[in-house]
Length: 219
Image 1 (cartoon, rainbow, N blue to C red):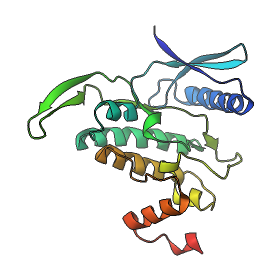
Image 2: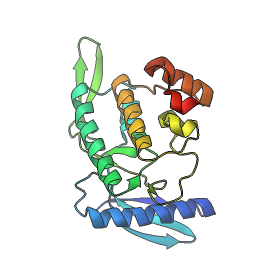
Image 3: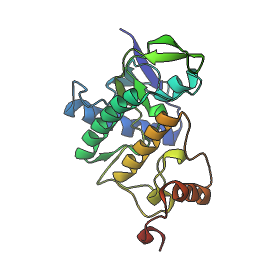
């Protein structure tokens, strides 16, 4: 049996996040022992020379890694639909159980298997990889937050961060939904939509694509 082991740095804040992740994963394993809702399964955990080590089921490449290895070619609409359904099913399960992931991004969506076949696209004159299995799982619950826990001001990786987080208006489960939208358009285009590290520019890019922000958000 092959497994994946996450070895956490022996630094206080990383150790704290790891123990929080373990608690969440144990809870999810109890709620969904057969992993029907596409959350990665933790098999066990242990400590080794000051490092927290978490043992997971072995999965395939992340969706980001697959796109990168495929020359950043976008996924097909058919595949995006299948992945979107699974991601939404998984996050709906988390939200139903009063949990917000807070760090959804293509790197944290993994294929169960990343085997593929290579087909030559005559129109584009290039080889393209086509997955054999579209099943995915959501990983990395180190920042996951329960509804009744303290909500830190800043969450989510920059490119997938919701406007209410950028504006420090407070956040809840909808910040995951925004991240899903950013992920799906990235799957469709093959690149990140909001490629910036500046908050003002980020908001301006949002407005250019989606129109003005709601008045109540910018008063």
